[in-house]
Image 1 (cartoon, rainbow, N blue to C red):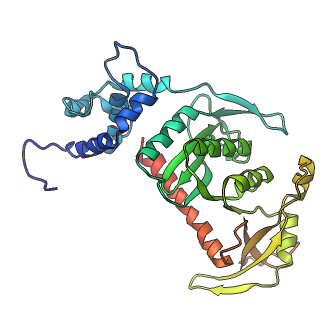
Image 2 (cartoon, helix red, strand yellow; image 1 turned 120 degrees about the vertical axis):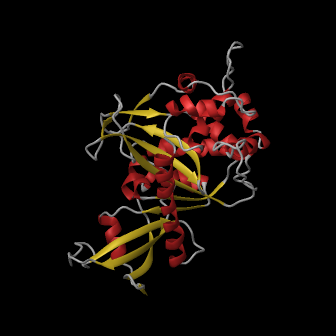
Image 3 (cartoon, rainbow, N blue to C red; image 1 turned 180 degrees about the vertical axis):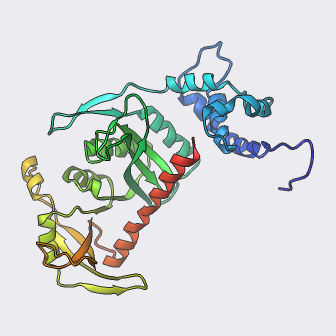
Length: 352
């Protein structure tokens, strides 16, 4: 592509390359076919609404109101879309919203407000499938929760002592495949098994097969292990420190020293049966499974000794059913999920 100094070229000309690619991939037709039917007298189609909405951020805008004024003037006459007003875009997007669901956890008296929109999540997966983002690949699904601080009237106080929403998000590579909102009073572990189950069900409906599942210690729960053991070939979940885990760590006698320019790490592993009490309480007739617990430890600077291990160390443990990789490969594979934080940064700061 050659850029010329010409009065016929505007600063918004590059947008046409993006919109043209959307058309080649039939994204506009997919939006028209999947989203609710609009009234016959409607001047703008769903393609007009969403192409215009996306164009704001492709062109450096910050909010839907940027669609007015000079921005709209520049886009008028574009061959790919008719440009609606900001109010029209907002009204149409509100039509896609659903009432919040009030849920209660099996234990506790608190009520939890969830925003579950299967239709929009389904549309997102259909778009990704149409772009062949998951074609012929061994897929790794990362799950995490992220906090969005806000001053919305309905947001509730969180454990961070601020008002926010706490979203549960599924990511494959750098593609968001599932989002479920929850209010600030619901921490990441609250009803997470139901969220993860809905996520896997939707992926199955769209023929997205997951080979590996990774998550942080917020997903170190008995019910999560049961779900991902059925839905994925392998899982890698960071374990939460407790008395039973510390006792298991204390039995490791195969520590390997790994030195780098930054620190000295000792790594070992042990066979471990987690969640004995939760398994007993669930009255599950199947026997409790044994998994690999891969543990890394470094010496504490403050020299505070762990009561159970009798060592002044900080521990990081990964629970997995992967029997093929060695301990170092498992740790390396798990820490790659750190890229999910970069995706959260992009989503929160680059799209309004």
